[in-house]
Length: 147
Image (cartoon, rainbow, N blue to C red):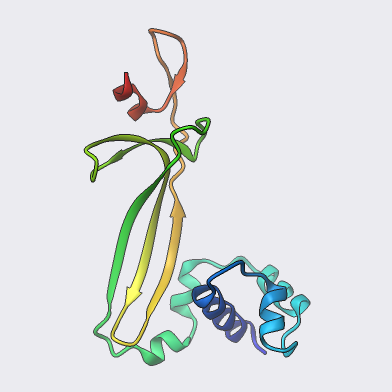
């Protein structure tokens, strides 16, 4: 099976699964038609990006009638008791009208009449820090609003 077909098959598996997803699980689902090793080699052969989905002649383009929409959304998974780092830090939550500590992630979905497909999921990393002149602690820019 060609890499493009394997990528489509693996993407379908990831989208439709409700629990843990693994190459071994996909192989078992297909009764060994595609081995774990074959899937691993395909995934490791080259770096895959969201742009690969658009470049590949996948079933998405075949099923789409052209009247689909792209949905982009950012969300925050709150982690108020976890130590701060580049991923778990302060973000402004528009729904609560305040800053919250957690993981900020952006998703991009394609939706049309016949299906919904997640194209991108990116976690926002905040690497910018500064020293608070009052106490000398490292902070992210939005954290200053918490005091």
